[in-house]
Image 1: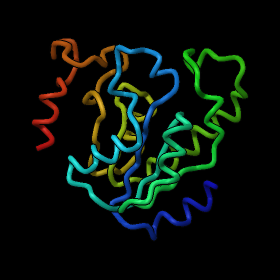
Image 2 (image 1 turned 60 degrees about the vertical axis):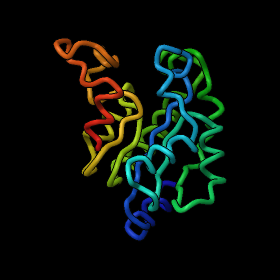
Image 3 (image 1 turned 90 degrees about the vertical axis):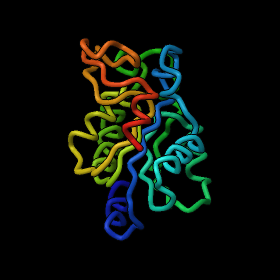
Image 4 (image 1 turned 30 degrees about the vertical axis):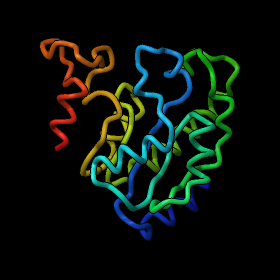
Length: 178
């Protein structure tokens, strides 16, 4: 539960990583393949950035990612809320779906967002408004993008000319992280 997770945040091993992994509607669009990764690949991304232990709060709309995170037995303590994520698997943007209980879905999203903002480090897809909002609300001292540097929603494209507001290509970003 949210309350139980929040109660443990102050006592978890640091750094506390807020991890946002997309798996639903964003993955239907193959123009953004780096957005859709496995939990194991996200752990590798942490390792590449020098983070090898700590705690993780996972936010995802992918039931496979949530299941893999719950079964994880590595050097990170992983916290995953018990949300029914099967309902989120769709090729239709969640905002356009009429089959969801919008209030319940919003409450679940808000709960996960409330946990992510507690993180010391955020890892996620910055094509996602969700990850960008988490970053804006948090006191995270670092963030690790899975795809793009910070960008306004409509200009979030890798390798776009900087004059259009895009930030950096993947190779350039890796250079900035070193």
